[in-house]
Amino acid sequence: MLSAYPAIFYKEDGTYWVEFPDLPGCQTVGESIGEVMEEAQEALGLYLASLIEDEEEINPASDIKSIVAEDDSFTSLVACDLTQYVRSAKAVKKTLTIPDWLNNMAEKNSINFSQTLQKALMEKLHIA
Image (tube, rainbow, N blue to C red; front, side):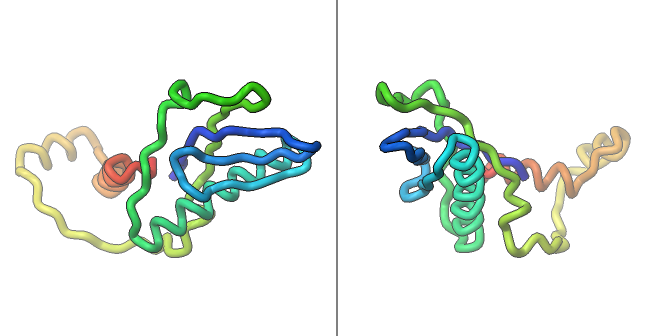
């Protein structure tokens, strides 16, 4: 479950800090660009996992081109694998109803129903 959000990176007094414009309060710091990138991935993962576990709405990621950085800063996409951060990755069984013709077509094309439903739900919830 990979998620990516634009972030703004700043350097001030030899320290880097990052904020995510789409995720209020999601920010972190680091002593080097490498360290702050790792910290940004962790901050993003923990922040999104917290929203998921609390069943709160997740803001969709903005187009990185729409993010304006100041002169001494830059923007970059930060990605993280949410499966590392979400506590309950336990699978649950769901029953659903679909039209017979759609079921037949999907089976003929070897569609994995669980995988397809998971992907569609994550896209709909803006966590994919």
